[in-house]
Image (cartoon, rainbow over all chains, first blue to last red; front, side, top):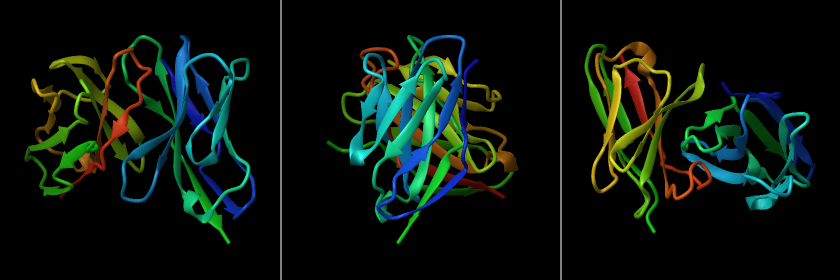
Length: 114
Length: 115
């Protein structure tokens, strides 16, 4: 069975500072990896995904993530955050060739202040 | 192209009742998945439908069921509601040409409150 651990439940940062949201996963099979963002009272929006190939993945809104197979991690980074990045961020995995079922982490609340 | 729509957006029910939630996927999408989001358990996968067949199921009791119609629209039903069923229920659709690789697009959710 797969599991996802988001190491920080809340991350407060100042505007224009860099940020890293940490994600570790556990799985006995090969997985795909995803980061989603959820703004208040909205559904989830895909930021980026890792399927195969280059371990550095670039997504929307200036976010990027790096897949590290040896450390089973998929940390999300942004070099300079904006107030509008305040939201909840979810890391997720799905088992390759097993359909769309996503296993989510508990989420990290990113709070950006001026 | 219109996004994933879910109806109703808000719902209040009492214990013991049953409820049906509806999801209309993005046009052309054949896969519909349902998730439950609660403060305590987070986001949990309920089930996935593809071409009117349940392809995958999460670890939820049989009170939770769903179906998909020929136009890919999906409904989920919860019978004999319990207080713990209060949650945001999210629906997601994808093209699903290749298993698991297509982006899932989420709807805004249905907020169910059980009193």
